[in-house]
Image (cartoon, rainbow, N blue to C red; front, side, top):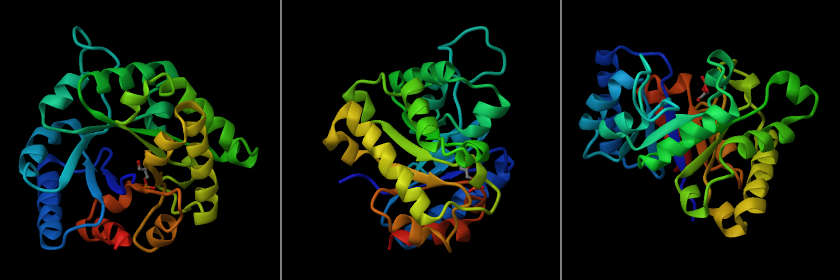
Length: 252
Ligand code: 13P
């Protein structure tokens, strides 16, 4: 059976002290009441080592929000996949629409990042999703398929085991406008079919596909109730422990 996952993406929020406080609160809440899913928190680079150490014996896994597309060397300000791995983090989020849009990350660059992340023993949460304009032109399927083909469909079946897909329609991110559960299920099923076309039905069936975009405790149960939605990648609602716990509880 594929994994059910609730993952947080803190984005560029929380100082180190605030991040440690949030991770501690979450650790305590989830120690008291075991979740029915895998829980991951994606933090800024500077939090990774401290938060990973703090969560070492907990059920919460830690993720970076990015890594470099180069292995090492004279790339001032960049953080490599090996460095991320050395902090104790298990995952890295790649292909987020904010990285694609504001930092010009192309499918080719993302392919390099995915390869380096996997080569360094990280698991990848790979984000795809269409803009409002593309949705209105009914291009969501073509966009998602092209984003997969451009950066992850070259992987071997063995490597694919370390990939989690996150479908995040750009028009739903931080807007309060969630895709309906039906809209999300339709495209999740399509994404699974694309995976099956490349890797076969069994691997597709074992691939976790998360939904992201204004997911919160109130809409998570309906979204997660759909057969092809295996959890969520959560932005705003991952910044407060009770809000995040409310989403985790959708798997009860
Ligand atoms: P929001 O949950 O704030 O809409 O953000 C979703 C997201 O981008 C997670 O990666």
